[in-house]
Amino acid sequence: MARLDDVEFSTFMEGVRERNPHEPEFVQAVQDVAEDIFEFIKDKQAYQSAQILRRIAEPDRVVSFRVTWEDDNGEVQVNRGYRVQNNNAIGPYKGGLRFHPSVNESVLKFLAFEQTFKNALTGLPMGGGKGGANFNPKGKSDREVMRFCQSFMTELFRHIGADVDVPAGDIGVGAREIGYMFGQYKRITNHFTGVLTGKGLEYGGSMIRPEATGYGTVYFLENMLKHQGRGLEGMRAVISGSGNVATHAAEKLIHLGAKPVTLSDSGGFIHDPEGLTLEKVQWVKSHKTHRRGRISEYAEEFKGATFHPGETPWSVPCDVALPCATQNELLGADARTLVANGCIAVSEGANMPCDLEAAHYFRGAKTMFGPGKAANAGGVAVSGLEMSQNSSRRSWKEPELQLMLREIMDDIHDRCLAYGQQLGGHVDYVKGANIAGFKKVADAMLAFGVV
Ligand code: NDP
Image (cartoon, rainbow, N blue to C red; front, side, top):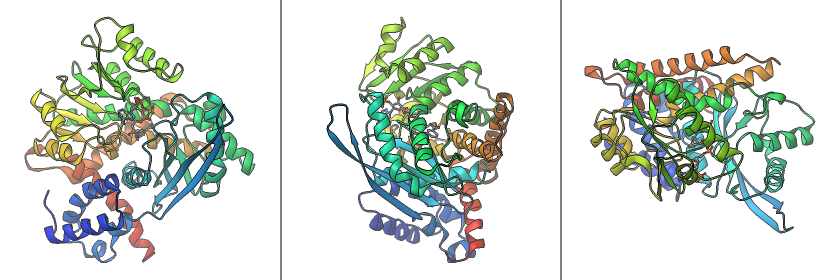
């Protein structure tokens, strides 16, 4: 990774570390982008003197608030809620809400920063934001989740709006939670507007929103392979996670003739050497969503599958890998194992699932490597289309939306190519995505002057 000047880069990163102490995920996300942007702006005085990167790496605002709610035993519970509004240069803030015990300011600032570039890459007018709470929905009753969501929205509502900031789902926030939060927003404000995406179809949701992230991640993978004259047919795929993104990625891989052989959750991974089928994926979706079950039970349900407690799936030999669970779940040693076992392409369904060492290794080994900000942008893209449908008070049909998702993922691939092509035909998708995303936001910020 060539840099404008190692001293200037180190000084910049030192400043980021000092201003954001104890925020390793945020520092990691900024470093990942800065490594490419320093080189890109070397001969571009306008971006340098306007301090564009420094400004994008400082959120517009971070709101943190208390969420008080009562559990089923009548006990008072207190959680911390957040909304990070990173940058709205090209459109209203947009990004998901995460409910998970690991949520803190560092995680949400990294996600909001990444989201800014991702949203720019989609070509749609959306700025970057992210939010959530350190609330653990696991083991909570429906009523407890409802009371938590209502209390969370009772503060969040004053910071969001259809033209201000439009949250969506993320880890721990699916259709159920979006429904409870939308209901509370409407009750408080008396406004029926497209203030959240990922809504149910009955009240303004879009077809294919649940599928969009996983499907888009596979389309991006297919585009990377196609660009090298290859296809997905017959490819063995290792997937982590078993939530929304992972199950829809598995489904699309099967549609396109590939063979997914693993899924995981925080308890371990399952290996099904026969390969998942559409019926098995359907079982997992229903098991995880309706029964709130664990992936370990897959091995009890389907003969030939094994469960590996406490392990990640990266040691299973494969042709392609799709990390679809969470940040920093694939480390440097895992990257080396994957490549040694024949993996030729990685498409990140999750946000920053590969740590810096793993990402550097894949880039150095010239593995096809689709970073999350490009590969998993299909979800937010369809969220953008949900916003358009809400504003125009109409709904597009599924085939139209499927086509639009496909086109958007093809365009994102092209934008990465524009800045990521290397001599000899290899494409550095990380560099391509970072520069294409940065340029769009930066040019808008230049137009606004010093603000
Ligand atoms: P879900 O809540 O539906 O599923 C998350 C999955 O990841 C579960 O299988 C969960 O297992 C597993 N997981 C979560 N934390 C950990 C952990 N610390 N270690 C191991 N496994 C873990 O979330 P999504 O599928 O929606 O999101 C997955 C990733 O994709 C996230 O990085 C998210 O930011 C990203 N993403 C999601 C989008 C969307 O549209 N939903 C859009 C773009 C990116 P368990 O049940 O044990 O917790």
